[in-house]
Length: 240
Length: 240
Image (cartoon, rainbow over all chains, first blue to last red; front, side, top):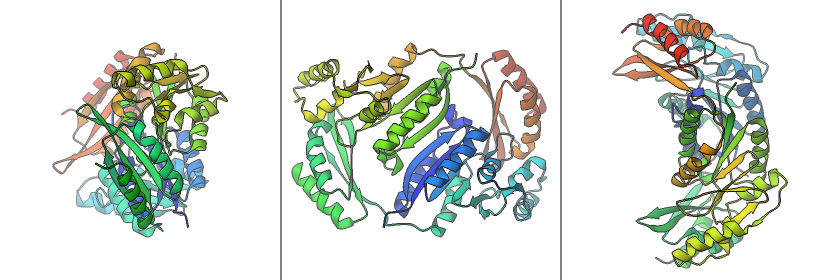
């Protein structure tokens, strides 16, 4: 059975302007690979209502899961929740359970739960909350879309709380070999190997070290014995 | 006149599996902002012919420029050039000028220009070559699509060579202010300001320092005097 597939949607002008370097894509990619969900595509869009709603529609229809990052804070440019609701034709309003979480959090800190902060309790109808152990304001899951914060520590904590609740596939195993030859010398034998082991995926990633060209060849697949066999052949073809 | 718009397409299984952390998106975003081209969306797709061709079609039609990164090396998984050609219905084959560049490069190093390396001379009909000062194999521009390597140093060098040939807009100026208050306290005044200065963009990026919540507020726009005026009001609303 093939693994479940996923997409990611990163929301935020700050990524597209270069002000902030996204860190969540790489984290999600590693976690999903480990968990046996295949991340198939990522999109980054600006804080634009139509861009968000359209991407949510397209990506949630195309994949088993969609993970979003960013745009769920208290400021005027935090419009993710509203546009995820819009993508599914759901109503959205301040929800009592989310408000109670925020109220308790801000009471403890003796900070006012003002109108802006209350925006973070806006949850689409029918969504399930995702716990935020860092700063309380919850994410949520609606249909197959998991809406999470953009701040890396919060994103990572939210992901850690939902991942065990999803159905994973076979974790992808990988082995890699450093070959101190130019990629152009490796390409022919690698193509042969990839044709005979068509159930595995083969990647070749060139590097240059002290002026010498080399490549790291990575073999990936869910069947460990097959990965071992292919790697044995590759090592034999390129002895150190 | 609004600035030209752009999209980016990152191609590669290694990004989606988490093996490699993409660095080119952040670099492109900073360079384009500096140059006055608005990066509006980014997509990351796997080494899949249809995914590449479809994304090239969609993004090149929607924006003034599309920049691609990755998939133009000598190995079997380097399929970007062929699928960019397919997206435009162009023929693609080994082209003499590209072959001559590779031949000279490998002759100097006394390396054979074998069949795998010759793949890097496959250029769609009507494309213009983009110089690669690092490892010779050229990128290319076809229509409004700029096809570049995924290795960051090569991507950066290729971008540096084409950016001056494009028509830029007004560079986006930005100023930022650290405010040691929770985002929820900043959100109200910031919304008022953003309504009165609707020609500017306002971002708020929360952080936590020694247990104290604060936010960096960034004001961006192409009119320096307007950015100054808005920043003066913001500073007055949140004196240190």
